[in-house]
Length: 300
Image 1: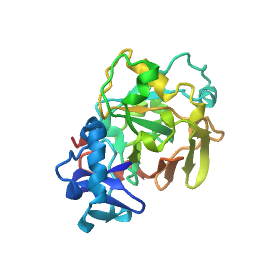
Image 2: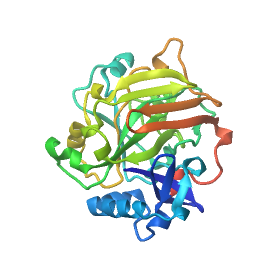
Image 3: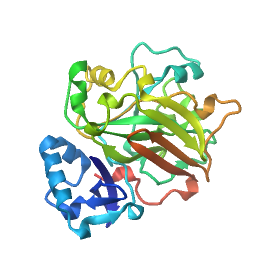
Image 4: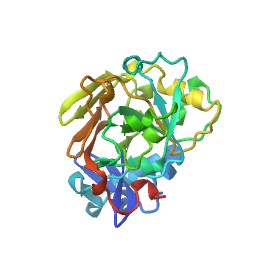
């Protein structure tokens, strides 16, 4: 199943994508939870209800995809836990050693924008870099979860562009500020449930394109720490809850490591494509083009 969070009448609602349209669940099944977090927490029973509702959806619940305003699949994640250096070629181009355990850092909800929404390069930096990544959406609560059981916590998969301000990232030994400028993290276009993909979303081709030029071309099987191992490691310390995100790290090919360096600038378009999941597309805007209203992560 492919679940889309989109804007309707100024609020986020859920839809189920078919091919070139979606079924608006606020019309087809208004009794169901209209936030992805709550729906995932409902487990298989909620999914069964959705399938029934989609099969019986009235015509007024059908919306063409070109009319959809996408939001991040989870608009207000409780935690966004990201992996650094999770591909050997990226560790090498960063001039760092292959890590012996997952390298974790945090992002915040105010950084998120959905599919087709602009990523915003702030005026204080010209080093706005792309990082195409697999995103894991947690669907079930877990703590101290064994690796063999870890994938049972996954509610779905999506795509992330971990936009990074490199000069700010390297101002300090830890990376928080460079990874957390408002509206710099693309997330979407949809949540793909695990039954549609290989276990752990393994062996999927990942490509990042900047203005149509391929900048990153890798495979999720090349991750140093896979999804199950990462969940097991995180839950040694941290309880994961429905709606939490794990962003699985980027492969080699980042703009900072290229010679000459390549950074995203206003007017560019960055796309991250993951086989079986789809393509996340974001234009790049300057800070003066950012919306004056609340960031998409402000919805609850």
